[in-house]
Image (tube, rainbow, N blue to C red; front, side):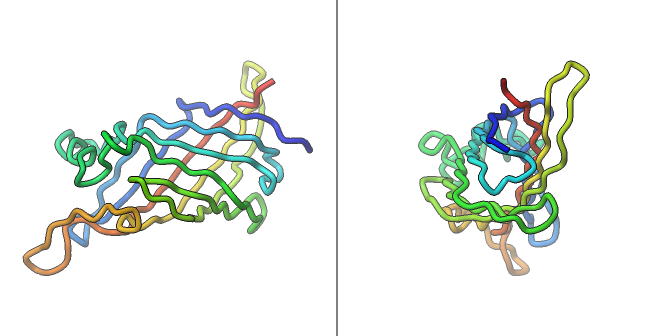
Amino acid sequence: MALSTWALDPTHSSVSFTIKHMMFSKVRGSFKNFDASIQADPSDLTTAQISFSVDLASVDTNNADRDNHLRTADFFDVENHPKLTFVAKTIAKSGDGEYDVTGDLTLHGVTRSETFKVEFGGEGKDPWGNVKAAFQAAGTIKRSDYGLTWNAALEAGGFLVGDDVKVEIEIQAAKQA
């Protein structure tokens, strides 16, 4: 089957993350503004062309003070590095509707190869006749790999902010004519 163009449906998609706080609890957050360019045959993603971008200023952890700190040079430095981008380079089938998508992730001015597990959730027509497809992606990145090293030592040992960031992406996309 030929590749089709798919437009991200932001009202039915999300980008979220989880990171350890004080070494024993988790902080969850999301990004409100993001976009994707998808050329794909959903039944076989191995030939897909996928790029993704996140507006880092749109971070939301349900705490305005923390969100404002994340926007500063201590973390994302959105004034100098406003976007996180990902461009898929290789896509390998790993199971039925499951793929390992490896590409260049750029954050904070640093580009590294990262692999995300992607699952094709399904395809169908909505009540208005639009063809929609769903995809889920998950992976873990190390924030220190991107120069995001701000932290605070804890009295009992360890650090305030964990290094591993678990990323989860839910995408619903509409097939374009």
